[in-house]
Amino acid sequence: MKNRIKNQTPFKLLMYVMLSLSIGISMPAAMADEVKDSIGDLGRINDPVQDAKQAYHNGIKEFVGISLEKGMLVPGLKASQEKTVRKHYRIRSLNRRWQSNINVEEDPRRMNQLKRYANRYNMMMIKLIEQNELKQQRQYRY
Image: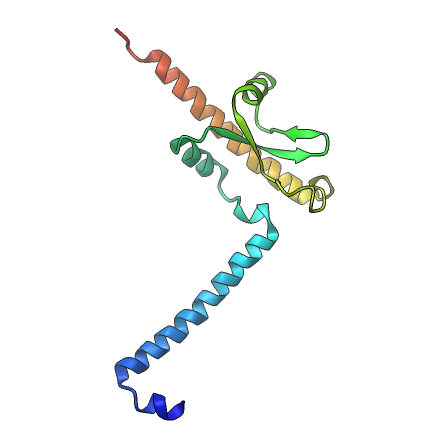
């Protein structure tokens, strides 16, 4: 192997070095992705406001909730809004694997993090939906 490297042109040596560096740099990133996947749902929740805006822009009008043993918790909505949401919109569970893992009620840090995310996401989604409805009502019609 040493002789093979010695006989290579400088360009090829540079390519070997760049390849080995790129592999060395991408390995920690791949391992970080693996850790995120092992964390589960918390690894993918970062910016609820941006997530809600992007989902709404893509035509996805869904709200998020937390699956508990007694039912689905939908934070961030008033009682009247919650009735409307449960009737007309889809509610996606943030902790969809709660039955296979320890219950979210037993981990207060995780529960608080999920509630905060769901609260901000749902408030932004309801705001966007209400703004669109108001815009449609105010539109001039012949």
